[in-house]
Image (cartoon, rainbow, N blue to C red; front, side, top):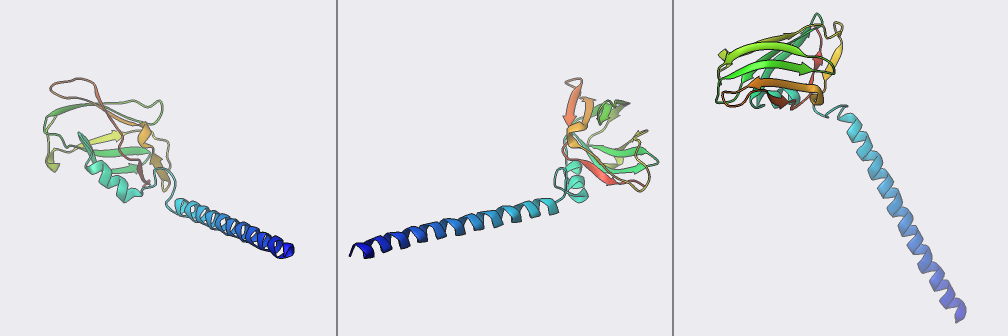
Length: 162
């Protein structure tokens, strides 16, 4: 009788251990799967060029409707998406870079009021992939009410140079 009780306890203890081992294996498989999926999404912010373009087109107050890197120069097409006329002062991209633009009276709205900004000397060679991190992108502007306002980057500016 005592042997039967001891064997039952051993069997029930063995079942608990088997259950915990199976749960541990499932958790490891889930973590590996999540890691692989995160790698497939890409590096950086996790969105591709299309997602970055959509984010920038709708950015406030300045949207970037198009960009390209040609001959080491970054060409941005900015659009005033606010309801006010704004003065664009500077576009800062990257560490230690400061490009003075000085374009006054950029009207609100329509695509006909887009402004081309050329940032020279990025140091990126032809046919190379590039990414300017959103953390390093700033647009400095004046509105009719407040001077020296700063718009932070909403997405990375990414692509392949021409």
